Length: 382
Image (cartoon, rainbow, N blue to C red; front, side, top):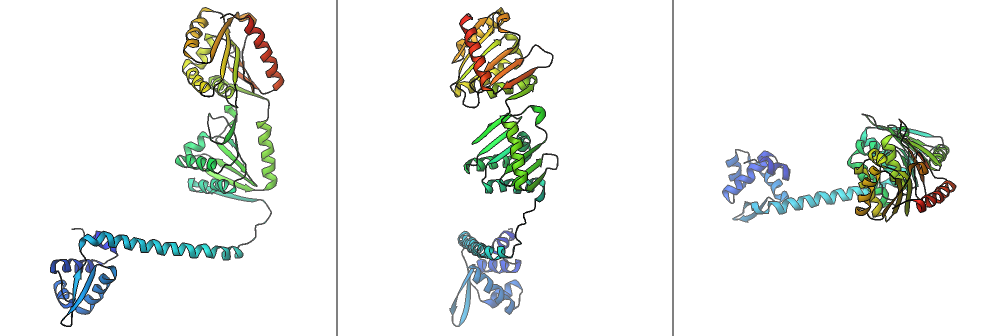
């Protein structure tokens, strides 16, 4: 039998456990009988038995002026252990209360914060958790600029916990990133992939926190109202820019996601073809249409009037809801694909060697393209 289990759970020595086992064997015994069985002197035995009495593992009665000791029934050990745990918890709560009451007194000794900019360095994931938790307690509007994917990859489960707590705290959040993300209670605008980098900047209140997501992540926290104000101004310069340029297939796919974000109700476009569909892929298109339909966005596009495009789009209009395609001669549509929602115009230049995507938020441009689409739509064939 492993007596260590008893000794560990009841804070007993090996000798005290052996005395308890002796009592179980004897049923009841005097101190002299217990000392004899365990090869101990009587005084020492009395001290050990006294500890068992205090732990509730033994009791005694007096008969003919002699003390007889009895062991606690083994079935009572769980109840005794729970009682012991409750005593420990009670002591811990009392200590916690004492420390809590002491905090105001300790804060009086704390040196007042100086107004000069304060710079702090946090290393390791634990340090980064510490500095990002400050943003949750601060509860000011939060601006995030940079890689969100690296944040999630590096901080793993904490990333999900932090975002959940941020959303539950109703912290207004704006995010500028090149990563394809969906965050609760956050507005997102996208950057070109070249603008993302390997770091993320968090701006809140008078704090600017820059986190480098390297093998050994590091965070720098700067406390300065002037710096925070300047960084927010730079943030909004990017946030409010009317024109962005993406490149490559990933750029095309990102632009499509942006088209159906921002509470769009309609999606219109011309210059489509099977050639363009081959670039952004049918698999991506299917996933995009699922999200579009979730948001109830109506979709009308004009495709080149060629056999390959008709064979591709014809069956898809029957399978996909809120989706209508008409066909028009390529020369009447121009050399590029133009697509727009109420909030954004996207031009896909896919005939060049390097794919380019131009995104334009200008309201006058959106209105002009809308008028041109309506003109082409009336002339297009079903």
